[in-house]
Image (cartoon, rainbow, N blue to C red; front, side, top):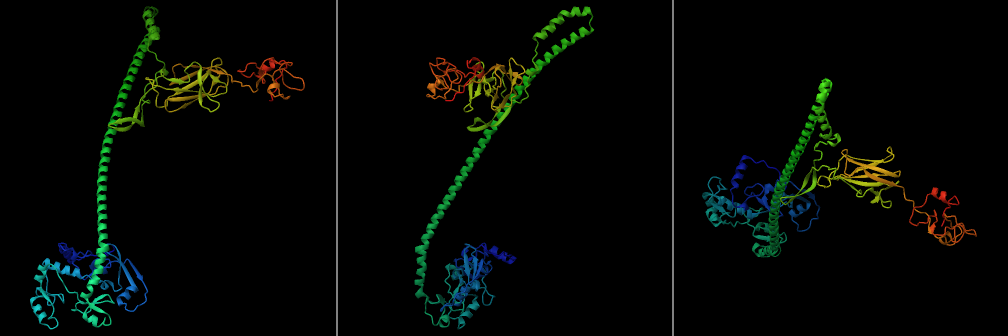
Length: 598
């Protein structure tokens, strides 16, 4: 809605405050909020004061050239020349104004009737429109003048106005409605009683005799039915049903809006109730975690106090006895030393044999490093709501730790040569990677859910103490540690597995590294002649020969071992390792090994 900002004077503000008390809104302009002054009808059928329309900001201006046609009025020709578009203050529709401005719009006579009726109903001050002195008591319906008693008599005496209809204002007020004549704007005092059909305009008698003398003009009562019926048909047949449909649609939208609001409000209440309940559950879980931490603190503190008291008592016992013995030896005479020797030796011997003496590496004060908070670990439900966050305070119990793959003596895990997956095997093989897993457990035998322990693994040859095997420890962050190694020399080894500088249960573990298995590269056959399909180039590792240029053996011929054997090493055992070349060279009567080419 485009409207220029108006600064109202004190008088206008007073008028506005007075008109705010008006009951009949049909008599009030929606722009200035006062009684209509020269009301004009916009093309969208909304009525405003002529001055208010003139003050609207133009939305657009357009110039159009149109040919003048016979019978076109000056108003239509001007409208075809210049078009001013404004926005309706009520509906924001784009409406076109004539080039002559608001004065070219149709006057809303119904609004004028409402204004006059509102003035009568509210007992507004009505002065005489002629003399301006006396109070108005009558109204001339032809001149539309309010007349005092003296001017009313004079109005009736004048020849020109003697035939005008004059009614009492009191009668008009009691009637509640007005039926004012519509007067011609060009000829004051002349009522619009005729209708010019070519111009499609109501005219007075003088207009019909002058401006429209060549046009067909009919009395308004003769054409009102036809024109009224066209309006009535549009309203009744087309627009009123549409209005009803629009009302139904509006009602559905309003019902949907109300249902939407109710559903959203109910959901908001559900969300807030859920949030309050969930917050209470989280708060209760938080208090439970804090209580658990306090219990752990008191428990660990008491254990530390007990350990401190034991160490302090042992220190006092040993310190006092050592101090006494040293003072006896340094300051006592021979007789004094010999006299106190018995009790001194018994005390020192007792302390040396049975006194509390834990090794320094075995003393592991609890500094709380085992206490951790896992914020995203599920912690069950509190009040029916799932919560997360748990306190972990498990410590490693070396007697419960296990080695996966160490279940049997001298058993470990190695990687499969085909797919690299861990597999359990007896011992380890030279040149192949071995693998085992250390699982740290608490006193209840449950696996710790965190890593971070100091794990040390050392693999030492039992006979060659200076020969060690390099190992790699990987923290899996779930309480398990993967240990991998690759032996380069066969023999017996000791595997030391320590956590916090202390051996786990079973450590050190024995590890036997065996020589890599030698697979046969030949074929297990009766002779080269049979396995080679009679080929003269087929060879064998045995000393057998055949006449006729054959390079391999043949059963029943010279040098054949007389039994099935491997062509690569002449071994008689089918399920065996291939003999190394050094062994073949030592036992072969031919002193060399011939290559098998099958």
